[in-house]
Length: 479
Image (cartoon, rainbow, N blue to C red; front, side, top):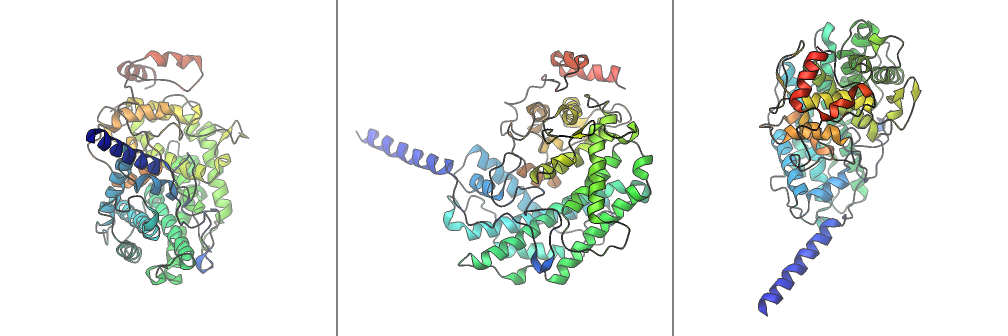
């Protein structure tokens, strides 16, 4: 009899926890709106955060909102919560690292941007946690999460440290600026979201935050101007001297992704010391990106994505080593565009804009990405073919997305190697957290699954090829 009673009690407790976990909690969160503190108004975005996370509130499948994240993290342990807590723990560890001062090194500047991005995210998350601690099922789910005071002080010290976080390359390879610039854009997006949150809780909380922890007007304007100046230089050295017309390959695509991503994030009224107009420059870069992927431009040479993949087929003319760089710029950029309902700028087929084309599902965009995932070695290396070398890639970290987010053929191609990764790159932790992932990468991936999203009959035979046969086929027929 006692066993039956104990069993009933345990079952009741389990069911109660399951019901609570399944129900979304009601939080005190800021509204989704643009940043306008000190009169520094957002030019193009209508919400913050907006480049990685989908605002404070929402339930989209295109990327997590902060509300969704809190409902997935501050709960009793599930596979999903454990996965997300591990990612946030990695971000916390990154946020505690020291910045690299007085460096000219490209990788160290990117690492500075990564550290600031982690500090900005943790500052925002800790504020939301402390303002909603009474509404959280398990407020202590992340045991090493610092207090908001510690987190925001780390962020402010980083922003004012003078550490370089944007890499300035030589004129003939200015596209290399895009990577560090896009990482810092996401960091700045989180900081501007933090300002919005402070303003919200100043009148909607019994524990209003201390505004002295934030930047003052001059400090904020300085960073806004620094970002715009870097974007101006990238735009000038890409478009104004026509290097993006002269250069064939993946770097014009990378450069325009960086320009558009940065201009979309523009806040305030920058001093225009060149010939750039933010609105015109954004329109131009978005138009170029539309042509790059869709084949709309008059000259094949300008259709970098379309031309390099033979109109969206499963290959990349410059090989997998270089294509991984284009994908690493394209996927985070398309992610931010889709979050902000701007896909019409980049989804064009034969010059006709269609809101129905999705770069995470449409064959023109994803076929070469499927190919890249399928030719990666089990160790996540690009194969040493064409003019490329064997190079480790971290794309699998964030491209094993779930079915609500994008193509499961892409997810399967990268999922087969994700769980075999022996290390993670700190620069991609935030994107991995923001993009809904397949949690069981091994179960959802089959190394021999080569399915073409292309309807061209020439490629239908790919469905029956093994991975080894596919590599042999590509080597013999493409390079």
